[in-house]
Image (cartoon, rainbow, N blue to C red; front, side, top):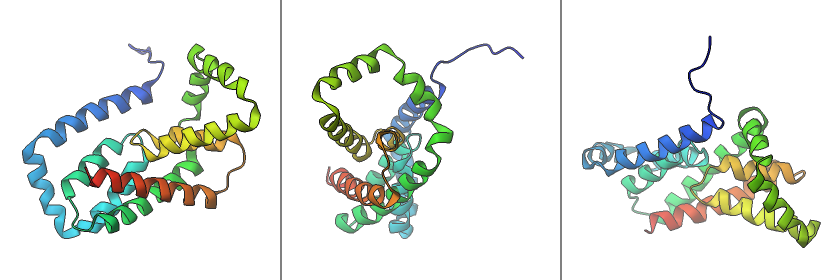
Length: 182
């Protein structure tokens, strides 16, 4: 069977569609009203939102849920959400080679990425690794897909799950705390 459309980055296209759909979903006041039913499962909702935050395809939905749930104790909610997001990141870490590695390898071959790597080569190996760790941390802490940050960390060398878990927990807890304070 011949495909009508051949997309170069189908997963990234789906991510963009989900971001746009999430915007329109959480813009609707009726959806927010229905989410108030989740208030009786308040911290379970925060935990599940944390797990969803770790995945690129569901991060926009998780952000909408965090804002809609509006927890009373923001610090506790950030800790619980950070724990959920850490579990999500550990799951991503274990399956990254199966799910997104093919598209990241395609992206590595693009002229933009080659140019960035060439420019970063002027710094030397150690500073380049530190910059990559910092950039991966920014991606993990932001609403951007954690798959990219985790893939960067797994590609830089041997980072163990314990170190990733600590880093992910700190970054996600801080990001969720800042998000809930908006």
